[in-house]
Image (cartoon, rainbow, N blue to C red; front, side, top):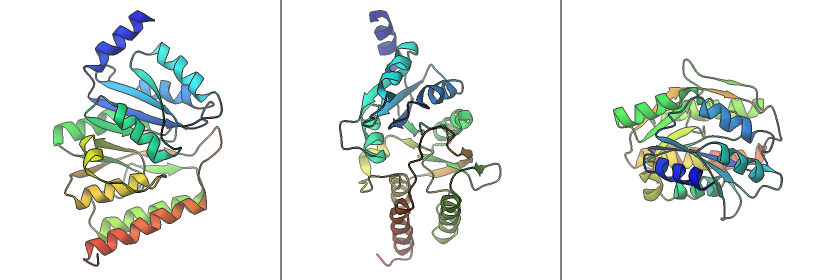
Length: 248
């Protein structure tokens, strides 16, 4: 145990990228998700932080077993109130890397593009690199149809209406420069957090790009999607248009 902890400490001094996995009641997915991600990262400069978001199942227990197996995996409990945004922020606070990459615990995000996202940010000096489902080479497989229609419309229309350089602003799969979280005030507590921080970063002058990605519908466990969760996105959608056209 002590030897493993010393290795973890030494590794943390070299971290450039922190992958944050918010996990609430994901006992069926978390092990497979982490092991899938590990296949596509540079273990020398990347850490994985699993955020146990007030789970009521064996998520934390399984996560800690994973962290014992892999030197670059840590487990943090979200001590804030439950929710996607607070889970991510708990991960950001604990992160050692210059860049933050949230990845869902249900295997919906494709880790094959992680190295490409990191390279684009570091070598081309982008502050946010968005995984985009709605450009050539990307796509969405499975999931609620109404959710797919809504996110497609929001992403593509904002690309043209406000000029934001991504076709998929609502996707949570984005790599961020860590300093963004220190400089931008975020109000949303749910999944719309990702859209809010990207829009506000755009209007603040941060440099944004995108890479095609595939999104896959959940195969195990219960989906967190509810129709009522689309309302914050609608609010942000009209806020962005009004801000762009000087109505705010």
